[in-house]
Image (cartoon, rainbow, N blue to C red; front, side, top):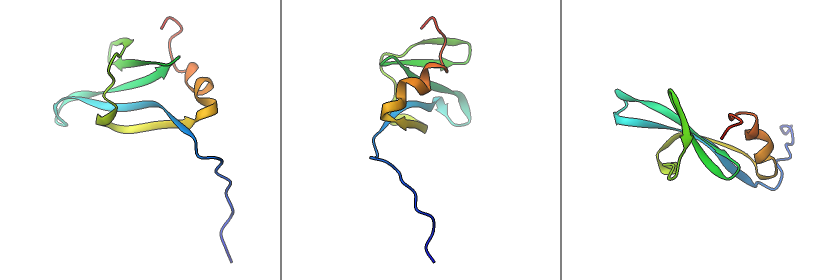
Length: 83
């Protein structure tokens, strides 16, 4: 007997957010979140939210992807309206 069949689609995904660490080591510093909004990266850093000109995508701990055709719908509701 075989397992259930799953249709995965064409496999096109887009990175829309990631978590990274700022600090000398994992024992000091803190984690921040970068989220992509309207083609620009926004950093959420404790008490501050601002644009991120060079997000450190290669230093992420957790990455979040969405199906490429749904990227804008998924992330729009997560971000403040004034950015």
